Amino acid sequence: MTTFPRLAAFALLAGLVAGCSSGGWGGYVAAGQDQQQANAAPLTVEQLSAKVGCKPKMQVDGAEVRTGYCKTSVGEFFVNTFKTEKLKDAWMDQAPEYNPHLVGPRWTVLGPLEVLEQLKSPLNGDLHLMDHRVSQTPTPK
Image 1 (tube, one colour):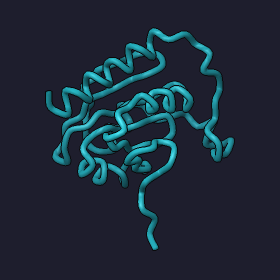
Image 2 (cartoon, rainbow, N blue to C red):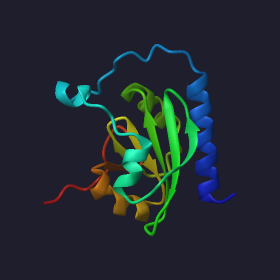
Image 3 (spheres, helix red, strand yellow):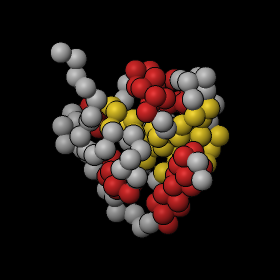
Image 4 (cartoon, one colour):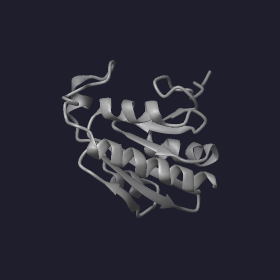
């Protein structure tokens, strides 16, 4: 099985699990976010995809998790959005550690590292190479 079918299967499974889970995620706000950012409407799969010139093919379209597949000149990747930060964290806790993630407020993008590096700037995301709770993106010196 190649990497993208695995990612697609994982994204679908995660969406199904999240869709079948009970509520109770509440109004969780990640530590360090200011109240204005917490109240801002999160970007949708379609909005994130449009920022990088893609019309996503929806894979999961649930109330708590949405996943779209994109293929652009940069490469192939999956865009995931979540109802809450806590749900995103729970989903990422189950994500394979060896797959890099581009992460933003209530969204993640999964794909090959070279693709994520190209998407980082237009999406204004943090690159997480292993532990999703700590950005692995090098800071300029």
